[in-house]
Length: 231
Ligand code: AP5
Image 1 (tube, protein in one colour):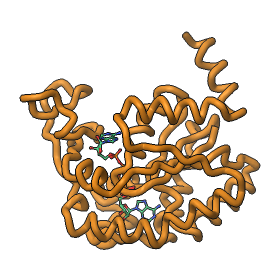
Image 2 (cartoon, rainbow, N blue to C red; image 1 turned 180 degrees about the horizontal axis):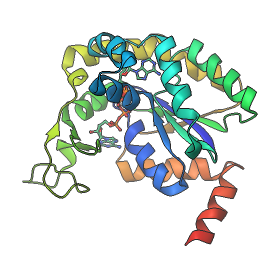
Image 3 (cartoon, protein in one colour; image 1 turned 60 degrees about the vertical axis):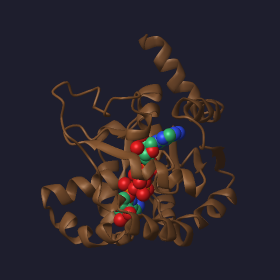
């Protein structure tokens, strides 16, 4: 199954991708994570992407398509993938259609997460990431009286706030989303691929909604069969 998760910054794409990776056994490809990793490693792509990311702007298509193409070529994408944060504008969507058309592996669905901006600001202001494994948490959903901690890494690694989660940068990212990314909803609706879900509720409720939507796609069947044989 090949799907795209689209939605505003903080709408929950990364959080839900992690759950879909476990449910369907296909990898998540997050261009944001790939770019942050390139910045941290100081690669040429990373050095060129950093200024745009710090300002809350889109990184130029040439870099994003280069980094995405390299990831897509890895063997774990053979049974499908979850695209998180890509494509982000019409030019990227057209490049993706062309690439997948050449490979004869078209998209199965594009899921748009709808969340109001008040909730988005709250989620982003509370987001913290594990410095060791990159998993994402939130101070507002930590059990009462305790600081959020990474339940995967047992040596209490530091949870950090993303630099582009500062208020002014978030405002810019939301503006960029409205101007450049939201028009993709029409692009994919016109192709019959768009599914919209209310992503305002709890993580568990959104996961249930998302899985119900994806499980109804014909492409989900082989993955379900593989899962039941493995268990
Ligand atoms: P990217 O990393 O893609 O950021 P984004 O799209 O802005 O998305 P976020 O990671 O902010 O949010 P999310 O929807 O994944 O939410 P999350 O699950 O973390 O991009 C960063 C930058 O990289 C861009 O600005 C750009 O510069 C560059 N870039 C990336 N891709 C690019 C591309 N294709 N082209 C050009 N440039 C590109 O959730 C947020 C918080 O809310 C978390 O704390 C989470 O725990 C919590 N949460 C999640 N769901 C719920 C829920 N249902 N209820 C309560 N809390 C929740």
